[in-house]
Length: 403
Image 1: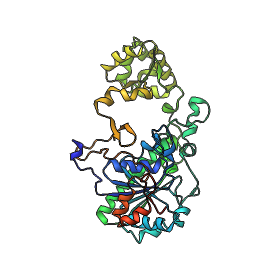
Image 2: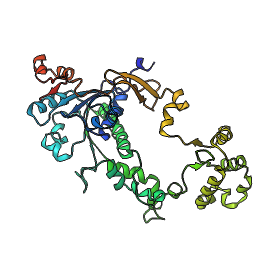
Image 3: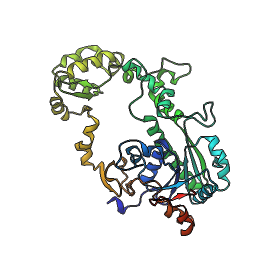
Image 4: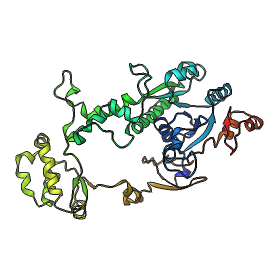
């Protein structure tokens, strides 16, 4: 079983001073891989604690989905005692993740220049809206702002006729992934050299690179060889196709895929049209191609297409609703959904890490923490006495250091 195997980041301690999704998601990814993640929260807690359905105060669903495999301590960094605790924590830390804007970090003495001499092996990850050396440095940013800045929202005009945000926090999630792998790269560097380093992960640059991979298109060259925008994916006709009783996503790619699809549809003659005959011709006539697929898909039900296409090697999927995913037979077959019993929140459903490592698999070993739940243990590990810890314990057992 996975619990018997050592996870790849065991022995690495991460201190997370970040709120919302970007930084905390990076911390969760590292925790899944075995890092010990300490989440340092202000007295009011991470804002996401108050977002979404909840069974108890400060344990909203938004918080629960990005804060597993962590311990929580409450520290007031506006007080001298809080800063002293932070310094003790940093002395035991391999990785710092923080989302403070640079002026605030500098005022607290948490800029990289201030910490590098004290903690030369520290991997210092600053998650920001915009790169610290650029013209937009220091601007506040959330997912919607970065979707707008990166051109992602404007791409939606091909579907809706006006800019729209993708209905998922894609900038936060993609940037969190980038932060996690950048931290792991920095840890590899440290393993070989002993050196820590500053790791800056800005959302704007991350999403600009993400968005422009295919859409740079003709502007890949200097001077440009054509316009920006990859038409096959930005076409208004590129969408799931309506069947007689639902929707189907379908993407024949090779010539043989196309030929077989039209044979299954009972329209083999379509491939005799030179505009459909080769990949190059289909690219030139992409709007016509999408329209023909739409017409053919509409002749059958989901079940009929499922029966026909399952025996073929043509990429397709029935279009699921979110509500379908908890019961998806494939996800069930790979134990994707984990049902765990939280000490205060009861049964919780969580997706496991989608990445599977055979020798050192990711795992969920700790459920999302209540606010300050582990403060006493963390302070004890920093050398504080029980009497000192008792002074900082609030009603309900929340250890609010330096209250």
